[in-house]
Length: 134
Image 1 (cartoon, rainbow, N blue to C red):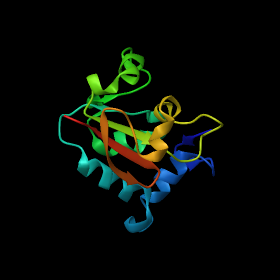
Image 2 (cartoon, rainbow, N blue to C red):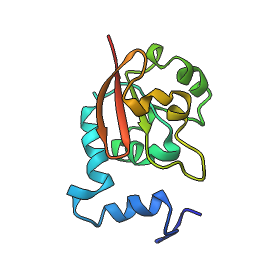
Image 3 (tube, rainbow, N blue to C red):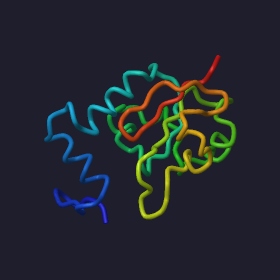
Image 4 (cartoon, one colour):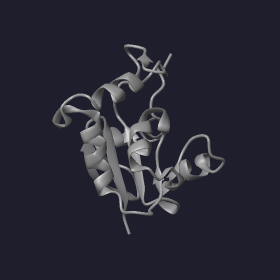
């Protein structure tokens, strides 16, 4: 599964993301992600699950500011994001292979644009953005 050189599985997220670079920006994942990225203040930490939010991390070009599932502190930050990050990016699209975004899985209320300690900042295609309430 996934992409190899220029070949991608027809149903993979990677394929859709790469294809979006060649389609008109008005109707693409790239436009949604760029619009979301414009809402993020530079240097502020972001909680995300790059299983589905890889386009956000890729386009941002600053992966060091993202707290991602393979990092040691991810579970701690996921359990109390309001203590550690300014933003939370959740994916609300169709689960991949029955596995949903870990944030949406842990906090099902994000589907209703709610997350304790955070204000809803917008929906960008299948992504929803929350900003910590100060």
